[in-house]
Length: 324
Image 1 (cartoon, rainbow, N blue to C red):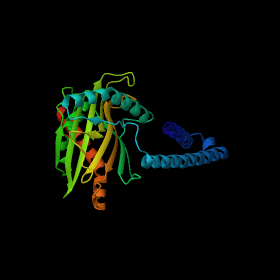
Image 2: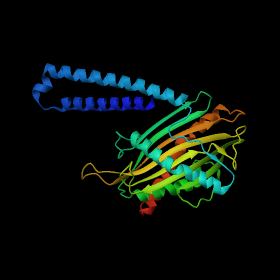
Image 3: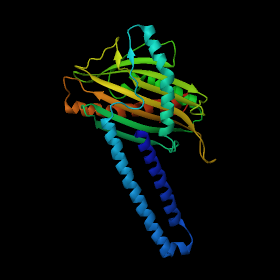
Image 4: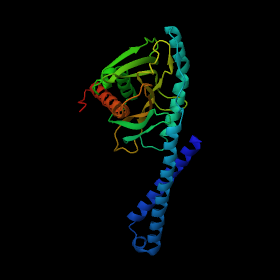
């Protein structure tokens, strides 16, 4: 259902773009006969009407997607992860998911970016309340780094920000976060749990796994790229959730770092981070005031903005530039 619908939406986008280009050619045509002829005016009007119809169809398709977001029990990148108390068993469990998560994330992002110009900034944010009252926030963004040619440089800056996010992001938001993490021998997998005080007497906990890879290319994406995939831990025997009294933030995300080819010699080297995030905020069983719910709902985009700023600072520092 979702794949078919997305294909239909992609087809509508392509049709609308083609119609817009055709209309622009007519408007820019220097031929006096075309500019003044009745046939040209009629064709112009027909193209405008087709563009309006395509816009209406896209609006209806977007309504279907918004409804699915609210009713969707699981999303394409979600995996049930249960961690035991034993450190060795925890690492084995995470390792067993690594290749699967990286493969699925690459496939998802290739499809999600198929018709996009990744040299240009882009941001789409949508939030809703699930049928059970949980808050869902989904965000997709393209963050270009102009005049940067090294994928590894941006990827390293991204990892640095993620591994120090209690300072890189939470502190910038004025939030105190305490982090507990496993000491992993393999840098491609890690687990961390954050406990944050959102307001007096209101704590939020986030427990997630992170899977990383930086490569010169793969069967799915034959260009150098870096990939960071995070998913929430569903059950953790070492850090059990306190659903009665605490907010719980389940966060799934994909961050893909890849080069953007030049279309002509006038363009500069560009490396972009393409980021998809889906957050689900479970309310505590004891309830939550509405003003706190609104504050937490805005946390995900603010956190993302803080992380983006930190990555830019790290990349600029590495290149000896002023990040401002």
